[in-house]
Length: 440
Image (cartoon, rainbow, N blue to C red; front, side, top):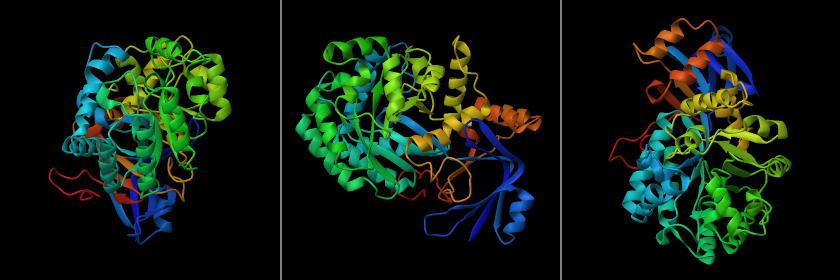
């Protein structure tokens, strides 16, 4: 069976290049094999003529985009969004770590996982690199719920052995054993993949990072993710803990943890050698602008990263981030660059690239998702302005596709996401009390 979604179709198959069809359509295979592929994208009349028997879906004012890709977000932190007035290290100690300790209770972990995945979906995010839990059972519960959700999720057990709450510590041996077991059980299952995840080198001894290296080496397709150069106090603390390291990145690089499947969140305060090394290894930086502003960490030096050839994508960084919406994150990225004297002038096409194709490539899914080219998996988000909304008013008079897309990033949020599809199938959040997978 073929389905055709009609609307204003927008995607960025190349950096900064917007391909737009004002009266457009995306046709895709909607069979029950769970692998719906895009068959055609283009003007509605052309796509319809090529697929005359397709089922047509159209919503008033619909804008059709690729599914959004979040490269840094924390599943245990839903409940602490909006914890104001704190810098990174005090925010961790007073709000974040106590909240994460609650996931020792399996019921809390499952409820949190369901809320988290439902919010990703409600905001049009179909693919995410997710910072997990410090507790092996909580992480297993998250994988169970993620598998049932139908979303594309990469995640892993968070490991630390110092500087946090004692309840969140593990010995290097125990962390390695639990991580290895979780990776063996969940990596490559459905749309799930595993990411080796030390919280940050500040909370890890050399022995813990050596254990991360050992786990990562067991699976060629596994990812690595952690934090880097987020806050000046954090950077100074790391320097004191690793006197042998040239810089913050070196605390990971010494253990073979920097490569093209490594994603580092933030990197607000990089040195030139770090940028050179990130580029040489093809590692990725997850830019999290709302979190950087919320915790007062600084304005991201995007131009320096791009000049060095460092790959950059977007992350919401819930719960220091202010919303699950990558439209919001794109707007915050735009605002931050406007405030930097050396900032990049980001346009709507740049923001869509960062929120879709750049993230897909960062997560090794560039052949699978990220744009609406034929052959890609039919991961789609349909944006429909709420009746009577400001977004509806602005879109009614938008003079161009770029203007319409700029309005979406500025004004569209959760209420504007009308439909989300993964591999051609509509995915929806389960109602409270429904069994896992009931919303797929």
